[in-house]
Length: 249
Image 1 (spheres, rainbow, N blue to C red):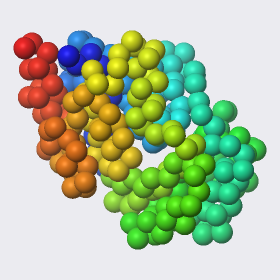
Image 2 (image 1 turned 90 degrees about the horizontal axis):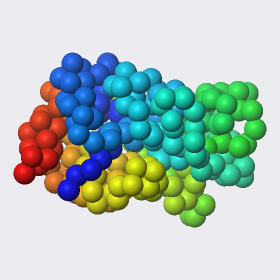
Image 3 (image 1 turned 135 degrees about the vertical axis):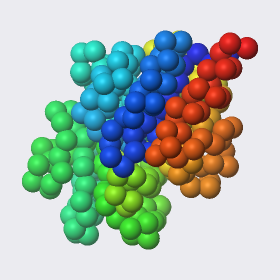
């Protein structure tokens, strides 16, 4: 029985224009009328709060690749898993040497330049706007580090790639499970939708999984249902033709 839904943001709820289409807005609203719905994304808290409030979602929301749980009503973080000072400094220093754009989440907001980093108490760091080859090389350079979870993700808004760094053992699946505890819902009783490599853990852990049409084949292969692309309102199609009918059976 599906009792909650967790939805990726980029490439799932929103497309390259970073807007929620009317069809997706209506479908998510219908779904939220039946169960708790929460966003699960690698993006920073401000984006999650903005889109969850636009959708009228009031249950805990998940940002920073599973490392940060937010209360959208009060607009605050209620739980986080810091990366650790040594790991944070190691990653940001590496990105500074590479000249790579990044965004880092900390308790008081985000930093996008080395000088803006207030200290090394960071929750998540994302290297941005790279070719897939560079993203793979960056991720591989941390392959021997067992203290961090490192995963690449596609950036639908510009066609480039990101590499996300969180504490080891922290990903979308663990974040979804933690949100599920606050809701009293196990992931096996959730539906999840996503489109990139960082969505794989939650798609594999949730009882019903949806991959978007623009997802890599590896993501589609683990899904129960492959929706049309985000440009074709694939999430709305999946909700209306695949998820909601199961609630009435």
